[in-house]
Image 1 (cartoon, rainbow, N blue to C red):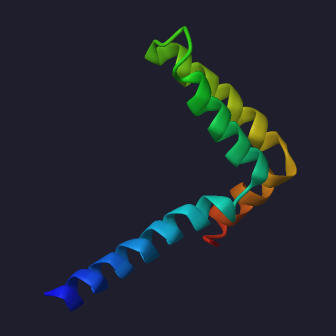
Image 2 (image 1 turned 60 degrees about the horizontal axis):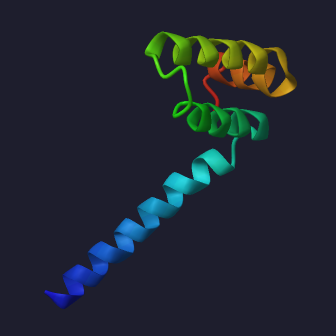
Length: 80
C-alpha cells in the first residue's frame, strides 16, 4: 500500500510538472496575455460578452506578431 501511494504521488508530481512546463515553453507574449486576461476576469465588467471581446482583441493582436505567424504556420503544418 505504501509503495503504491508513493508511486501515485510521484506520478502526480510528474504530471503537474508537465502541465506547468508546456505553457512555459510557449510564446512569452501569449503567456503574458493569458495572465493579463485572467487577472482582468475578476475586474468589472465581469460579463461574459466583455471578457470574450477582450480575448478576441488579444488573439487578433497576438496573431499579427512573429509568434502568431509561427504558431499559425505550425498549426497549418501540423507541427508541435
